[in-house]
Amino acid sequence: MSFSSLSLDSRLLQAIDETGYTTPTAIQLAAIPAILCKHDIMAGAQTGTGKTAAFTLPILHQLLSQPLNGKAKALVLTPTRELAQQVFKNIENYAKHTDISTALVYGGVSINPQIEKIKQGVDIVVATPGRLLDHLINQSLHLDELQYMVFDEADRMLDMGFKDEINNILKRVPSQRQTLLFSATFDDSVYGLSKSLLTEPKLIEVGERNSAATKVEQIVYTVDADRKRELTSFLIGSKNWKQVLIFTRTKQGADALAKEMCKDGIKTQSIHGDKSQGARDKALAEFKEGKTRALVATDVAARGIDILDLQYVINYELPYIAEDYIHRIGRTGRAGKSGLALSLMSPDEEWLLTAVEEVLDTRLLQQWLPGYEPDLTKVSTKSGKNTRKPSKKHARKKALGQKPNRKKR
Ligand code: AMP
Figure (cartoon, protein in one colour):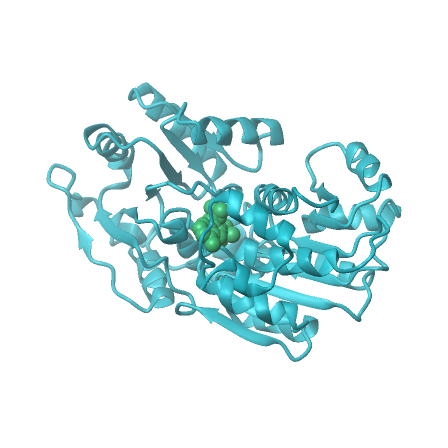
């Protein structure tokens, strides 16, 4: 099936053609007609499936069939600045032959240019929840004419603790609107959110729920924690891997690893929430251009990274939130391309792998790489240190860099 059979505006079809897309992806085939029929939708799609175009194109089409007055008609909410930028770029691209104007609104940068842009009139706003709320409270943005609202990566938005912001935003938008919810994974909290947001939604699922990108080969090497850096540099160097995205759990871990890998002769940078937006953009651009060979990222910072040809993802540490594994490895294998996701698991992280396997509903084969076999005599069984499974809440807080609440005695 071709894009032209989806009855989209010719200006959009021209942009799609120029982008080089020939056939719609599965999520686009399912979602675009449903959105054009004005249904609310709840869509579960693997990362990298083309979901951005799946919601952007029908919204643009509907905006093109009505008079516009510079007051925001569509809002896309994303959990991170990087994803907001990515969505914004997509919209700008698909709308390049139209007069539709889009504003990008996120925190960590001065609010004034955003206010100026909004003053000039915007039809679509792409935003992260916190900064959007600032604009709404300051009345620099009004959403009283909003018709379309998209929650992109809703699961991550909830994981990042944006529930209060979302509820606050919902009080400031019309209840009569079309709402589209996209989530790579579904759990009770996403279902809970969907109930309060959506009216008789069409459920769209492409691929299995909570499944990892199918063309991604997954390998798990068991290795001692203190030899992970050595093994990472060895693999990248000996296999001549060019563009490698590496995940750590903490910002400090990301910085330390990038520094050590540079000493190993592998040009590496890190990105995480403590770096300025400018530094994050620069590191990402240099990685995309191939100026840096490896990029070490925390889960939050990596969300939204879209590099079509990214082939290698290394889980330097397994995530505390098992669903993050799917998001991480979804950075590779995008739009049907193949990829390799390598997890380096120290023996005391085995419970994290078990959690990942539960979410994937599959077993991942553990392997030892000759020369890097774990020293099993090192694993402490006496104290139970690092081997005890923390509560899900504790793990989540730790993963998000928040301090766990101490129990009152
Ligand atoms: P997304 O899931 O929206 O992040 O998209 C993943 C990647 O697929 C992006 O690089 C898109 O540019 C690309 N893409 C989206 N739709 C198509 C399509 N119909 N054909 C080929 N590539 C696509």
